[in-house]
Length: 336
Image (cartoon, rainbow, N blue to C red; front, side):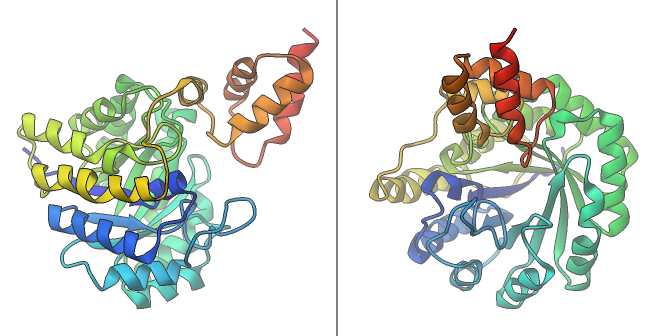
C-alpha cells in the first residue's frame, strides 16, 4: 500500500484556538514532540499565515520570524512549513522565513482563485522550497472547477495540490469524488485537509487516501478553527488499523497531545476542541466560522434565527470579505 505523508497543523491552524498566543517555548516543545513522533511536515505560525497579524485577524505573541527561528533549531527530520495567503503574506515574508529555516510553504487561495497564487508559487520554487497549492473551501466548487484551478497551481510549479475542506462541510463521497478526479488528471500528488464540524474529519481523510491522496493533515487532539481539524493521533490510529504505511509512531503522537499540548492549553486556560451547535451549523451551512458572531448580531437585530442566516449565506456561497451580505440576508429573512 502507498505510504501517506502527514502534515500537522497544531502550531498554525491550532493557533486560532489559543488566540495566536503560543510562546516560543510552547512552539518548541510541541514541534519537538511532533518531530520525534515522525510527522513529515510541521506547519507553524499565525493562524492566518505569514503576515497574518492585524486588527482583523488578531496579533500573535511573537512574529513569524521569531517562531520560525525558535522551531528551526529543534527539528531533526520534519520539514518546517508555513502557510501563505496571497494578499496577506508577501514574497518578502517568505524569503525571510526561508533564510531562517523554513523548508516548505503552502500557498492558499479560495478554490476558484488559484491564479492569484502564480507569483508566490513560482517564487517559492525559485527559493528551493517544497511548495503546496492549497485550494480552500473546496466544497463550494464542482470537481471540474477544482481541477481547472488545481491545474493552474500545477503549471506554476506546485509539488502537491490540496482539496481543502475549510468549513468542515464535505461528506465522504464528495471527498472521494473530488480527490479521485484530481488524482486521475494531475501529474503531481493530491492532498486533503479536513475540519471536524460534521464529525467526519477522520473518515474524510481516510476516504481521501482511498481516492488517491498521498498527503493528509491533522492537528494534535484536533486543535484548530471551527470544531477543529482532523485529530492527528486518531488519524494515525485508523491508518495503523488499516495497515496504511506512514512515518508516525502511534504512542509517540498520542503522548505529544496528552503530555505536551494539553498541559500548554491548560496553562493558557483554553478549552479543548469539541463539536458544538455553532461548529455543527457552520459545517452544515458551509461557511467560515468567522461568520458566526456577525450572524448572531444580525439575527438579534432583525429578530430572525442565526442558523437560518448562516444557511442562506451558504446557499449564496458567501466567503470571507462578503460579511456585508449577512445584514442583507437577515433583513430579507425578516421580511419574508
